[in-house]
Length: 106
Image (cartoon, rainbow, N blue to C red; front, side, top):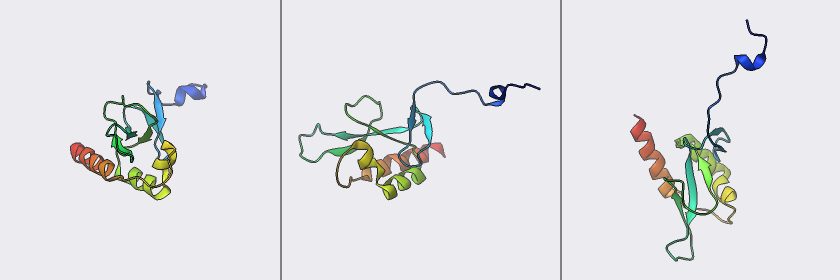
């Protein structure tokens, strides 16, 4: 029996780790969705989008593609806070992406 407690732990996953704004759980960046504000339309109001490729400029908020994490993020108003903006955001597009992701897993 090993005496070293670290030998009893699961092997750690390799890669960048981020924190979900919904459940506050830490996971690999590749597992989470990145949310950013898209200002490319030239509108005064920035639009919240899911950064599928992870390459859009600007500050990002990370979220598990789970309805319960999105609901927790909405309830706690953590997406605008993570993106450092005042006021509410329209999460309609994020809901659609989470539902589509949920349908893919079935």
